[in-house]
Length: 235
Length: 250
Ligand SMILES: Nc1ncnc2c1ncn2[C@@H]1O[C@H](COP(=O)(O)OP(=O)(O)O)[C@@H](O)[C@H]1O
Ligand SMILES: [Mg+2]
Picture 1: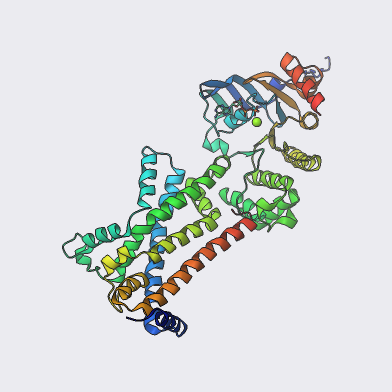
Picture 2 (picture 1 turned 90 degrees about the horizontal axis):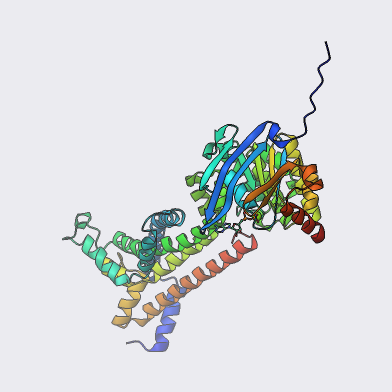
């Protein structure tokens, strides 16, 4: 068991020396979470846009479901994906359990409702503003959707960043489907959980510092986007 | 053989060539009849000004004639064709508050031109020149002044080369200079053959622009006469009161 001060100085030296095993974990984290955000956007943006623009029976039910899915507990998502991907599960033949792919799937499931629900809000607000003008110009639905997405680009980017923030910080889902295997599926959050329990506070703290700075950068980026979009009246 | 004497027709709205025809138009919302069995003949190639007190139904009538709202009953025919999405392609509308895309001035025009399949740069330049926004081409549209925004909205409407241009109080929140600029553009569009249907509260503007005046009150059309006749000898008490109010408030 290291002492506290020792843990901190080890943590800083790991970060400052760009320790290879630390880097490996960070890069895998980023790869998994960025892929998940990309996939979640590919599902969530069209879904959110559809619900924003369409009026159909059961729309309010869809909204309630979507909003509740936003708060899905990561461990529950992890468990469901585990059941799907385990050898006995319906997708067991894919042999994805305990691979980064499984972690990407789990995080995608976890955050696409966030992307969909938040983008629905953003797009619907713009749609309300543009609808009559678009009708007057006879803008076809597809082009209207594309125009809404484009004009909401700054807000949607902050939505994606919010999704990324949630993905990169969650531990419950990736630890279940990834297993925290060294050099294979070990990401920042699972490593922190494991190293802390093993008493290797230095590595855990180093990863904690990196995770915190990522989260800070994401928030700074969101803020910068808000300011930029407001300055150019894109907000 | 006596020389044919040209028949002097009184200039009457119903006798010019008809562009549009509204018959028995009814619109209801919130359990109220807001447009009440309106009949209207719209002469071709003229500037028709719609006037009337607040809440008379002027905006609703324009939206109905442009197909933005579905009437409860009645027919709207343009050029002998029932109003549908095809017919609407030949119309454009400018609203009191312009809704501009969150893009540059030029990109707003490109968007409209693209919709009609001709997103040419020289067309954009021509339109920008037309509304005197060449210098602002690359500025974000929503940072323009109120008058500039409305000029851009007008340019976007003209980009679709409409046969009929609806304008719903486009200068209501503009100062006299900006108002004059809009009127000039509208006037030029009319001279090039665009039918103008213009709602205004501004008596001076109505006098400047009107060929004929539609006077609305409580969801009905009370009068539709040549402009001079309306301003000099309004027939209905509502119109007399309305014109008095306008004089007092201006
Ligand atoms: N969707 C609606 N539901 C209920 N009342 C409406 C609706 N739209 C307009 N109205 C009412 O219809 C009347 C006419 O509206 P409008 O055409 O906007 O008047 P204006 O002549 O001032 O343009 C107003 O009294 C307005 O409050
Ligand atoms: Mg109105």
